[in-house]
Length: 207
Image (cartoon, rainbow, N blue to C red; front, side):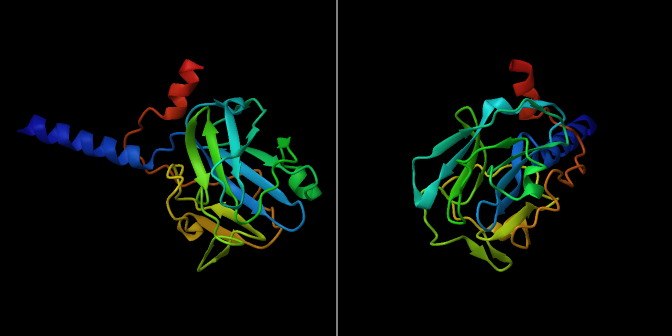
């Protein structure tokens, strides 16, 4: 009986760890500002370096179901570090944090964005196949003319591309064209009792 209880306890701890474990990259900041002030920050919260060149950003404009794909061209993103892609005509302060620029990163507040590793979705922003009008809105604000930062408690990507999108569920809202948090991300994902092997670690092994 004691062995059974111990086994159940370990399983429960492992399950709790799996729920809070950061298993892959995710979008940690979204800038949709005035003019060409557009940027995305991607965070590596796993325990392993990840090669960003295996990833793409898919842009689904105005409710489209077919994306325009933007390859990410950098190298390794270390644990706890971020990768920033921006429009080349963004503010100098945004470009100072950019690891990559691409003119195709020209999304608006009603465009869905998907971070993929090969054919696998690892995170998404918005709702693919749905046009919300000018933006997705919630009690805190809108996805147009705003900077959204993922909350520190957010640890995993949104893999459901077609489900309704509520930006208030996992983002903090900042003023138009603000970029003070760009280039770094704070995540409170350390209350894991037992660390599980992350998907990022598995990818690092087989790459």
